[in-house]
Amino acid sequence: MALKKLVAGNWKMHGLSSDLAEISTIAEAARAYPSVDVALCVPAILIERAARAVPGFAIGGQDVHQEAKGAHTGCTSAQMLLDAGAALTIVGHSERRDAQRESDAEVQAKAEAALGCGLNVILCVGESLEIREGGKAVDTVLAQLDGSIPPQPPEEAELAIAYEPIWAIGTGKIPTADEIAEMHAAIRGRLVERYIAPGSGVRILYGGSVKASNAGEIFSIPDVDGALVGGASLRADDFMPIVAAAAAVEA
Ligand code: PEP
Image (cartoon, rainbow, N blue to C red; front, side):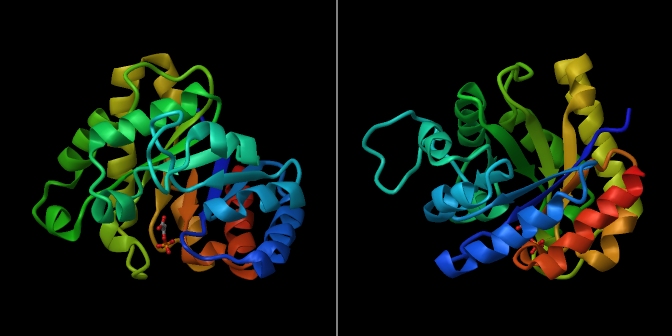
């Protein structure tokens, strides 16, 4: 079953009010590609202004706290993201798993909190170069997936998985098409095992150095249902050709 492709940008810690115009440019350009879902996950402080600037376009957060409220200095709850106008959030990005020492259990709690209040979730998994070179990439990613996804298929909102090999993020290196195909097939298999029929409807995105020049090939790999894009999502000139490549594969 071919799923509608989702191309989501992760702006990480980039973006000031002067960049709202770029968000508007991307949202406007995305209207030409109704066969692709397009989203931008921006810094928390920009969400409200971005959502107001581009009504109807999906603006997301990059992380969420698992509690609804409380003594968690510097954190943002799912309700707060929703209240600011977000439609989705990333959870479990490798930069947070690494720098903030987020465990699978924490990522799972964050995903459940977000989905439970109606926010769509992009949940990231991915292996280090050492693990890939040691031949343990698939086992490691499936273990991460097992520990991070909600026990039951979500009903309140959409869960998508982003396979992001850590060594491909921001490096210009990407796995071979066969390696991506193998990993996405393994993730699909595990989702169907865990969620039965709904497992085949979960979109599996690839992330890691996606750009205009490689997007077409990546999107044509079976079970690649879109992309999570970092650096190349900051400028419409770089991002929109990736969206166009997703639309071309859909056509
Ligand atoms: C990311 O960090 O989610 C990412 C995919 O980054 P980049 O596209 O820059 O490799």
